[in-house]
Length: 524
Image 1 (spheres, rainbow, N blue to C red):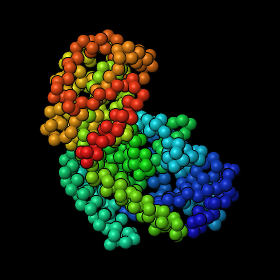
Image 2 (image 1 turned 30 degrees about the horizontal axis):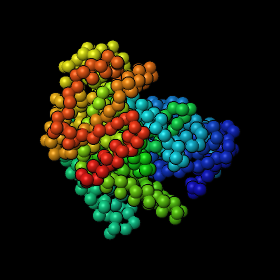
Image 3 (image 1 turned 45 degrees about the vertical axis):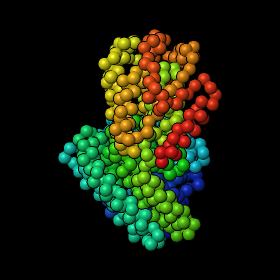
Image 4 (image 1 turned 120 degrees about the vertical axis):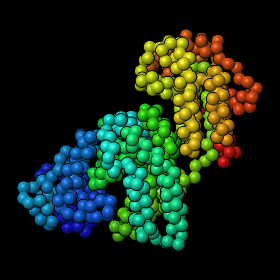
């Protein structure tokens, strides 16, 4: 229980103008959150950490209003109003009529277990949750306000300040500087060097419109599943510099949180779904910087929380959180040797199904030609373009543009230290040569994954997929027939890079995963 007399007073049912259940208190390093049954009241602590300042009543009132305004962008059904607390600390009245002694944000209380962090802890987090995050966040990022060119938001020096500011808080709070400080110093040196290398890209991304008014604190504890809908809440209201950020910094927070909680395959699923919906593959060039930054933020928060707690067990738990996040930040600074994987096969051979699974399992960027081709020509992934074989977006020229775009995006990902799976038919030798030469120029290993199935099975799969209308592919029986008659056979030089996968066999994927896993171990 807190020793703050006002919060103690608000633990009584008589402080509220409505019926309450058993009142519960959740305390963070910056807030007290009171759960009353139907409603939640959030009160800001009178603290000043530099990156936030709630030190006066007027500032707390202002930031309560900002919290309401900003969160109503994506969770209007939760955030209701700002209310005053009147009376005295010993006998407070929530939403009373007298002079305000404090302010609170009133919210609708949702069911326990709705937080994605809770679902993760209970083993309930599933692929639908991840796909929902990708859909909601990508849509939000493409519609929220863009930073003005003359603002400080998203400028390289601003980004550098807020990343390195974490070290200012971490260093004084360490338990054992002799053992813990070297790890922090290594991270500090990496952050400084990475910023030096990526500052120009940061500047360009602002010019290109990727610095936007985001959520700012998007981790699993700030996302809920309410009535089947993914609902972000509790965004950053206290410092616009931490909210007006590169969208890649935002998605990095969720990715990092999934990794920390042991859900790495879901982290890759989310990243790929987000990229396939936004097309922001160039953002991969700065993703590692932001992953490290987000891990440092959580490490800092854990230490700040630890030093506010009196309970020894809780303090130990918070320090373990710190250690876990610092270790994760260190992992992000040491990427594995990238590998390039190319799918090969006719429509309906199972390329996308297996490539998607493999990307989650080995941790790879999954580039889909069906999606990128449509994006190039102004269509969404599930749009019906009305194109036939050798027509519309499937002309020879459109194909060349598509494969060149895939090669450009793959090069960015590979040079940023990510494994890449390029998911396309690759039926022409010229298409394969484009990527084989790229891998050679980057001195990276490459494999062609040749997915096979009987013609009858290919036809059945295409028919079923067209009936369901839930995939980006527009392949038809006509397109399949054209592929069967025009494909270029593998050259002997290509066969040494090729792995054949019979997708009609039950053990297909397990065998593929084993072979690729062995390849990755050999390369690293």
